[in-house]
Length: 225
Image 1 (spheres, rainbow, N blue to C red):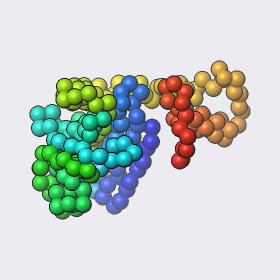
Image 2 (cartoon, rainbow, N blue to C red):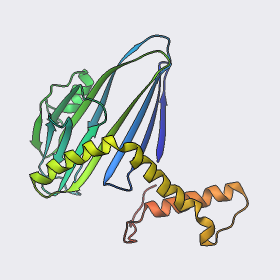
Image 3 (cartoon, rainbow, N blue to C red):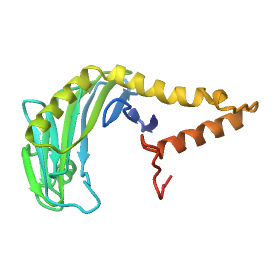
């Protein structure tokens, strides 16, 4: 689990990101604290410009209104991007063009174009909300991946996303407990260390090695850490 904090005079935002052990899923949990003594109007944007495959080819990004999420597919893989809160606005576009979602974010208003097809597509989601003084607002964003298998599977993907949103606490705990158990069982591997700094180094090394491996024990050839 990667924890990152961002802070200025008005807000403290904490981001927790992790890859689920139960699904092909990236979760980004956001916690936004209003540090001021006045109510704040907040507009939060999520932007994606996924590069699918080593050599990009034509892909489609589409906002599914009935499911309140984005899908992106290129004939090989499907991605579904959603949340656990209602989306205020959205945009699907082509990067480096007038329809680019990134350009709309810079303007602060999404045009709500619901589909884009091209070599380099991008998209954005927006949430608008109020945070009272000293209160915290929570939001989770999900990126779900599936090997492409036709439109029926895409619909299944959006349903899976809804299930994940309802059970995200269990998914988080399952993932956290999985990695925690990997390092807490070091004594079973015959590793006995007395100094805390040695324990921390060995745990981090073990986690790093495990993160570079797949389920069949293959290991990435050129890791960049």
